Image (cartoon, rainbow, N blue to C red; front, side, top):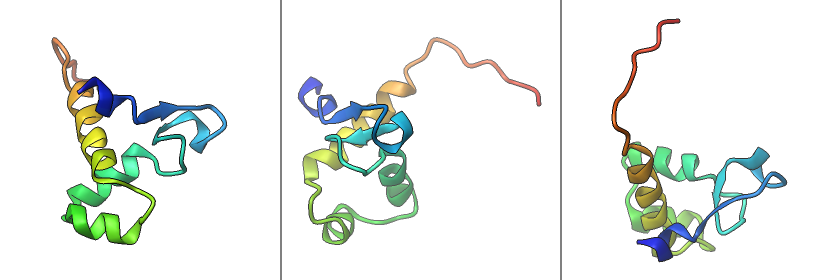
Length: 77
């Protein structure tokens, strides 16, 4: 799992410091949005040929880690 997470990079000079895949201009957020919209791994990889299957798995692993919290507080706007 740590090997997958090493594919996720934070660089203030790329995509305003958002988490990206291997210092490329592919934000993790974009990949998760594509998956949530119903795109399959093969479809995403066909549209973005410089990505690898492990990159997609890294995004999912990263998202799973972000949800590991002890509690969530409701914030009123």
